[in-house]
Length: 98
Image (cartoon, rainbow, N blue to C red; front, side, top):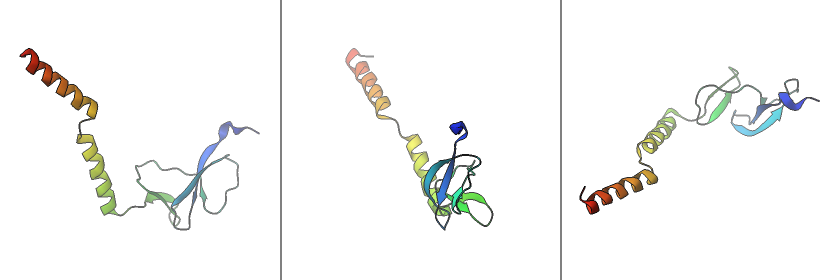
């Protein structure tokens, strides 16, 4: 048996939300709530749309906006290491009269 062709599949609940990620082979017969297809767009909470057979965002637009704002806020924060470096440089300038 050739396991080099293993791929991920997603076990979802009846609402389409992911319960487990499992490994399957291309020729495996899948259970009713097991999906082989993956998603290509960014999804915070992937949800399988059974009617249209593709992944959709499981969060509301408001929840997505909050997550995106959190990401933007984190990007704007200066990392501790960089802050420490700036403080050391500033202290050096003060001590050395630079």
